[in-house]
Image (cartoon, rainbow, N blue to C red; front, side):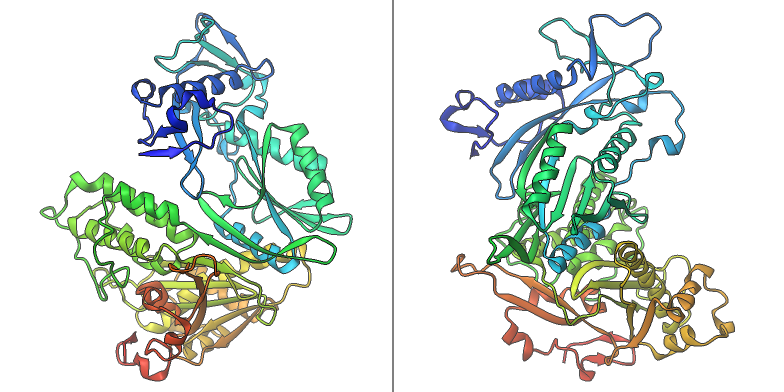
Length: 595
């Protein structure tokens, strides 16, 4: 397959007909040499080595001193593409074998923080609320810009098979190299020093050390650092221009303009322009369309077949694997597929989250049934790949709203309950979770709901504390539950003797809800109602915009069956039997049924 070239740093003469061969990424240097794209990989390798051997980063050596510790290294090759599938660049990263370093390091010396996905979505929500435009900067060879203390420096041997034109066999590293245990921490400290030295008015969040929020000349300014990616949110061009000058003069970085791609996510920022000429975001959509298409090709999904209407067969309960049903030959493919689906579910697809976490328990005991069910989820995701997680501010909605629910004894094998919650910031979904309650076995539905509420409060309180660090006027958290007994347990002073077997950590919810930071509400339905807003690209008129598919569905139903794929339009939704009502629930077994 031939794809058009979009790498400005490559020589067009190296590509016949201005194209390249689309093939799997080489796993070794030898495979790269045998690749039809060897000329492009060779240029990427030489660019990486030249970056390492800059005078302030490393000293090249032709021989290693006797008795010195020399760490081996290898190349990691990646053909990087844009969100539309076109070529971005050939990437060759030289990484050291950090596991071969026998030096003892304390945990504090190797830990490097990375932001949570919830923090990233919270940043986008704050951009919509405060009319901040998000911009993207990428630091090139970030770790190689972090200085290594003199007593921690080391020698590195070039990857096997690579021959330097000047006869160098390795280098004595002055700055950090990818793969070493301490490189992440050194770069994290370097980035933090840059922020504190250049922007002393910004404060580092206590709850997510990669988030910086403050005011510059009375203008709100937010920075989120994800390893080598800097996401900058500001309202005026002067603030962005100042940051642009500072980061370009300190690091070797590239400016990508308004945020449009992050962690393989496609970010679509829709804006409006003020009379002054400045733009601000009104709606942000996140999607994984290209990643889903690539996964289908990787796992040989026949996308021409009739797609499933839901991620998983309703009521599916796989038996506990026995030695006769376990198939170790599919363990690696199953793990790879489950981990890929987990990434999709945690980023933009809450409708498949329950199903993927359910199948994740079969990774260490793989069965053909589990692999088949996982491929069904991927096929469903492909059929709904047009869906995007849409974020738009709702000024009438509370600042933080959590909806929680549980499925009592939902796991037929272990009889453990399953917790699920969704967290909204001014009507924008920023966090969701579904997890089996392993720490305790709920004896009745009230206990299961109590545990689920505690887990929802934990996540909501983390976001609440982050907001109150920088915005003192944060509103109380609203927790929505559907069980009156849970309300009684949380609000009463005395703890019931029937709950003594529940872990102590779950009882903290009583103090949170009785304090000034939280308020408790009971949903009108047996299962509480949440709102998820998705957008689907029209197939016939792609230039007409994105018609909204707004669904009001029970959280339990969202996390368990994925009815979103059955919705076709808002008009159908208003007259469908999936709308929550007292007739849609079977009170005897606490499960939703279709009318």
